[in-house]
Image (cartoon, rainbow, N blue to C red; front, side, top):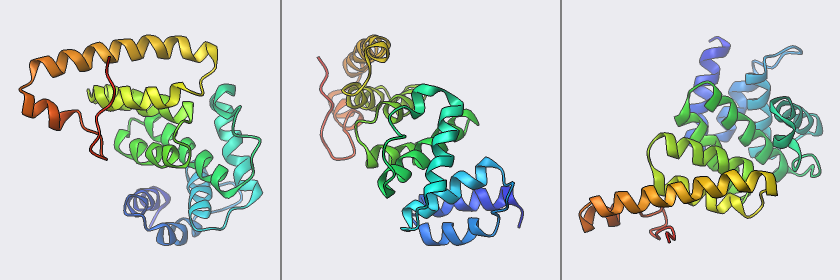
Length: 196
């Protein structure tokens, strides 16, 4: 099996929450000069199997910093297993999104949001993907959750997007039959996002 096939199988194992299998699979492909795809997945698997190492956190933080300083600013302080889970999940989600693999990106970004529900970076990326999929209610929900910890510079464009998404959600709910609107705009837990 080559590295590309291993990455695809790794993502399948993660989607099935088989972190031990993912860890064992990716471990065979780690070399001193491995590609970032392999190293990010190794860090992710190590974090989710309880085997985090400081150099893995540094690698994930460095990868996020290479994408832009705003992505790594709030990640560098903590060295816990939870922080590695968040960094690795966010990095893999962004990487998958940049590779136009939104299903894989959603999988990793949902895990990042599970680790830190109001993380602004994960919320923005998740909102972008949901909006591209025309699931405006979920996009709105993700942006509202992440908005609470955004800086002033980040919050202004987010506020504009939130207003636009509210209009879209309202417009969609007015064009649907009541039974369709109820089922379409419910979150996974059965509640509905607040739209005003």
